[in-house]
Length: 374
Image (cartoon, rainbow, N blue to C red; front, side, top):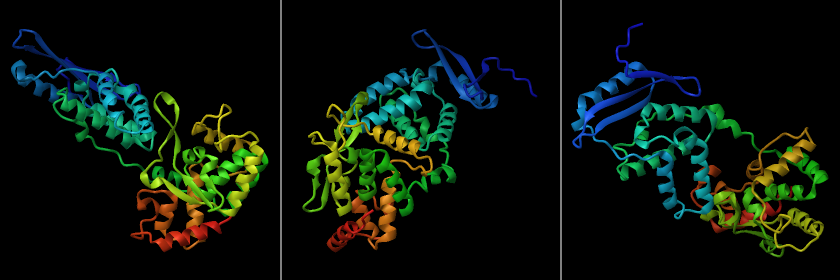
């Protein structure tokens, strides 16, 4: 093994046990006679660190432009204070969670100008192994670096130089079976009804309408139109800043919609309201009359599965997939009409086949969904 002559380049280990290299370099005195020093870390090899070391050394103090310094945490606070006023509160909360859980633990106390490309490459590779939505974390960090560049805290955006990992096919297809066929759904509903009628009503509602979990939790009784056999979807329950439960607008503009109410679902809802007893304007209120946390739906589902271990497990969102699957398999409704019923903004989510939904398609879809009694 060749002898490494540069003693300024040190070896260190990450929490994962991986080996990296770093150096601290004195460049000389600046124009104000103050010493100019810099630190670089995150190099995968000694030779990689040496190359950058030599580049900086050759610049000297006169050609080395010292950028203003700010930590990632402080930069994020500056950016987020502006960002949160431009988006829905629930979206701001998600971004804040992304930063707190996936960027802050790695780089929160680091100076933004001291973060190297190798360090970022290691980070994004680690994230890609942990979570499916790792690209969102990358886009957020890239946005922060762009903001830092605008404020003259960095001289370039290192995220532009990253090699973004591809999600494996197995990971992409992880949710491929996240839905029930008709027999599985019937088995689930029978079990849920015996266990808890409120839980049963909630999942019966999802399976018969394709509503998102928050949309169902946000329903008021006035949204149920028994005469015209329509459910009005106008809101969703979401988590806002400081993890507060809020009533929000639906996910997209297309999500504000009217969903067909089947005769079978109407019967279940009427029975549920009788069992609900007390007068309340909400379908699924908290004991104090407030809005349920979206995570409560997951708790209900876990209780059903714990009570009946023979049931195949799917997620709460899987009931939306179940509705769409049965709708496509058991009717001749066109994908564009399914898109309208589900409130998808992009047709690619509902088999991008047709170019538009005619009024006849909508009328026909409503009639056929009414006959799709589960």
